[in-house]
Figure (spheres, helix red, strand yellow):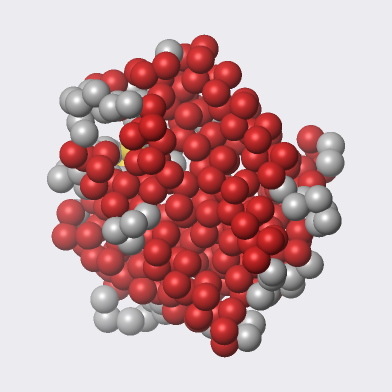
Length: 294
C-alpha cells in the first residue's frame, strides 16, 4: 500500500473509532456529570489510536466485519486510556501533559481522574462483551483483554517499571518489562478480533509473534523520541524518562543502536505475519511505528 493510501485508511479508521468511543461512552445526563466529563475528556481526546488501528487491520486480514472490529478497537482504547490517566497521576509519573493538553488529574483533580480510569476499565469489558460474535469467541477475547491488562500484563509491567527507577536493568529484563507494560495490549488489539472470529491456532500464533515484535518496536522508538524530540511534537513531556532516572533502551544501548534494534524488530514482525492472509495493512502499521516522529 502506498503511503498516501495508508494515511487515508488510517485517518478513516481513527475517525471511526473516535465516533464509536463517543457512541459507547455513558450518557451525559447521568448524575455523576463530572466523572463522565472526565472519562470523555481522555477517551475521546484524539491520539495516535495505534491499538485501534491494529485491531481494524487484524480484522481486515482475517476477513472479519468492521462492526466486530469496532468492539475490539474501542475496548483496547478504553483500557489504554484508563492506563494513561492513572500513569499520569502524581503517585506514578506525575505528568501534566498528555495528547497535547493538560492531563486528566490536572483538569478534574486527582480523585475524579482516578475514578475516570476506574470507570473506563469495566466499560471496556462491557463493550467487548457486546461484540457480534459467537459466545465462545467473546469469552476467549474477554480472557485475552483481562490477561493483557492485569498483573501478568500492563499493570504488572507498570509495577516493574516503578520498582526499577534508578536501577540498572539488563536488556532481557527491560524487554520482559515492556512486553508486559506495552506489548501485552498491542497483542490484545491484534489477537482479539481473531479470537472473536474463532480463527485457527496457527493464525493466532503468527499474529501473536507479530504483536510481540511491534510492541517492543513501539517502546524502543518511544524511548528514542523521549530523548530526541520536544514536548510540543510529542504531545507529552519530553525527557521525562531521563529526568526520572528510568531505565530505557536508549540508556542501555544508545540512540543509534536503539534505532537499529527497532528496525530489526520491525523486519522480524513483518516476517512473522501469516502468508495466507492479506496482511499488508499490518505490515504498513509496523513500518509506520518504526518511523514515527511523535
